[in-house]
Image: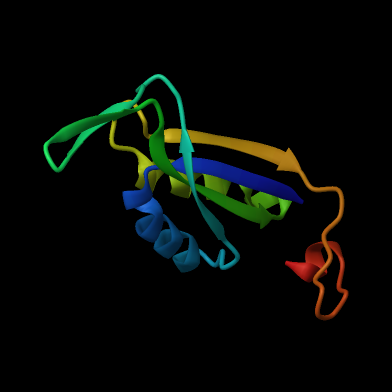
Amino acid sequence: MQLVSAVVRPTKVGEICEALQTLGFHGVTVTDTTGLGKVGGHTEIYRGTKYSSEFQQHAKLEIITRDEDVHDVIDVICTVASTGRLGDGKIWVTTVGELVRIRTREIDTDAL
Protein backbone atom coordinates (compact mmCIF):
# COMPACT_ATOMS: atom_id res chain seq x y z
CA MET A 1 0.00 0.00 0.00
CA GLN A 2 1.07 3.55 -0.68
CA LEU A 3 0.15 6.98 0.64
CA VAL A 4 -0.18 9.47 -2.19
CA SER A 5 0.15 13.02 -0.86
CA ALA A 6 -0.46 16.04 -3.06
CA VAL A 7 -0.33 19.77 -2.44
CA VAL A 8 -2.57 21.52 -4.97
CA ARG A 9 -4.44 24.77 -5.57
CA PRO A 10 -7.53 24.94 -3.30
CA THR A 11 -9.72 25.73 -6.31
CA LYS A 12 -8.90 22.31 -7.80
CA VAL A 13 -9.83 20.14 -4.80
CA GLY A 14 -13.47 19.58 -5.74
CA GLU A 15 -12.64 18.59 -9.30
CA ILE A 16 -9.85 16.25 -8.16
CA CYS A 17 -12.05 14.51 -5.57
CA GLU A 18 -14.85 14.14 -8.13
CA ALA A 19 -12.46 12.61 -10.69
CA LEU A 20 -10.99 10.24 -8.09
CA GLN A 21 -14.46 9.07 -7.03
CA THR A 22 -15.43 8.49 -10.65
CA LEU A 23 -12.51 6.04 -10.90
CA GLY A 24 -13.46 4.30 -7.64
CA PHE A 25 -11.11 6.01 -5.18
CA HIS A 26 -13.32 7.17 -2.31
CA GLY A 27 -11.05 7.71 0.68
CA VAL A 28 -9.48 11.17 0.46
CA THR A 29 -8.32 13.39 3.32
CA VAL A 30 -8.14 17.11 2.56
CA THR A 31 -6.31 19.63 4.72
CA ASP A 32 -6.06 23.39 4.20
CA THR A 33 -2.42 24.40 4.36
CA THR A 34 0.03 27.16 3.49
CA GLY A 35 3.46 26.90 1.99
CA LEU A 36 6.38 28.64 0.43
CA GLY A 37 7.73 27.62 -2.95
CA LYS A 38 8.99 29.08 -6.19
CA VAL A 39 5.89 31.23 -6.61
CA GLY A 40 6.72 33.23 -3.48
CA GLY A 41 4.21 35.24 -1.54
CA HIS A 42 1.35 37.49 -2.46
CA THR A 43 0.04 40.92 -1.52
CA GLU A 44 -3.54 41.68 -0.54
CA ILE A 45 -5.26 44.97 0.19
CA TYR A 46 -7.60 45.07 3.16
CA ARG A 47 -9.36 48.35 4.00
CA GLY A 48 -6.84 50.34 2.02
CA THR A 49 -3.76 48.76 3.65
CA LYS A 50 -1.42 46.42 1.82
CA TYR A 51 -0.56 43.15 3.55
CA SER A 52 2.18 40.87 2.28
CA SER A 53 2.50 37.18 3.00
CA GLU A 54 5.38 34.91 2.08
CA PHE A 55 3.04 31.93 2.05
CA GLN A 56 0.53 30.70 -0.52
CA GLN A 57 -2.75 28.97 0.34
CA HIS A 58 -2.89 25.35 -0.80
CA ALA A 59 -4.76 22.14 -0.04
CA LYS A 60 -3.11 18.85 0.87
CA LEU A 61 -4.76 15.65 -0.35
CA GLU A 62 -3.90 12.25 1.12
CA ILE A 63 -5.04 9.00 -0.48
CA ILE A 64 -4.02 5.50 0.67
CA THR A 65 -4.15 3.06 -2.21
CA ARG A 66 -2.94 -0.30 -3.42
CA ASP A 67 0.51 -0.37 -5.03
CA GLU A 68 -0.95 -1.13 -8.46
CA ASP A 69 -3.27 1.92 -8.33
CA VAL A 70 -0.66 4.56 -7.43
CA HIS A 71 0.02 5.72 -10.98
CA ASP A 72 -3.71 5.97 -11.75
CA VAL A 73 -4.17 8.28 -8.74
CA ILE A 74 -1.15 10.37 -9.74
CA ASP A 75 -2.41 10.63 -13.32
CA VAL A 76 -5.84 11.86 -12.19
CA ILE A 77 -4.35 14.48 -9.88
CA CYS A 78 -1.89 15.74 -12.52
CA THR A 79 -4.54 15.88 -15.24
CA VAL A 80 -7.08 17.80 -13.16
CA ALA A 81 -4.73 20.02 -11.12
CA SER A 82 -2.49 21.22 -13.95
CA THR A 83 -2.92 24.81 -15.11
CA GLY A 84 0.53 25.05 -16.68
CA ARG A 85 1.54 27.82 -14.27
CA LEU A 86 3.89 27.92 -11.30
CA GLY A 87 2.15 26.84 -8.12
CA ASP A 88 0.23 23.85 -9.51
CA GLY A 89 1.68 21.77 -6.67
CA LYS A 90 3.61 18.60 -5.89
CA ILE A 91 2.86 14.90 -5.42
CA TRP A 92 4.88 12.44 -3.38
CA VAL A 93 4.38 8.78 -2.52
CA THR A 94 5.20 7.11 0.79
CA THR A 95 5.04 3.41 1.60
CA VAL A 96 2.42 2.49 4.22
CA GLY A 97 3.68 -0.19 6.59
CA GLU A 98 0.34 -1.06 8.15
CA LEU A 99 -3.24 0.19 7.92
CA VAL A 100 -5.97 -0.53 10.49
CA ARG A 101 -9.65 0.37 10.24
CA ILE A 102 -10.54 1.34 13.79
CA ARG A 103 -14.20 0.28 13.71
CA THR A 104 -13.64 -3.30 12.50
CA ARG A 105 -9.91 -3.74 13.16
CA GLU A 106 -9.47 -4.90 9.57
CA ILE A 107 -5.86 -4.54 8.47
CA ASP A 108 -3.97 -3.55 5.35
CA THR A 109 -5.87 -3.86 2.03
CA ASP A 110 -9.01 -5.10 3.85
CA ALA A 111 -9.08 -1.73 5.61
CA LEU A 112 -9.08 0.32 2.40
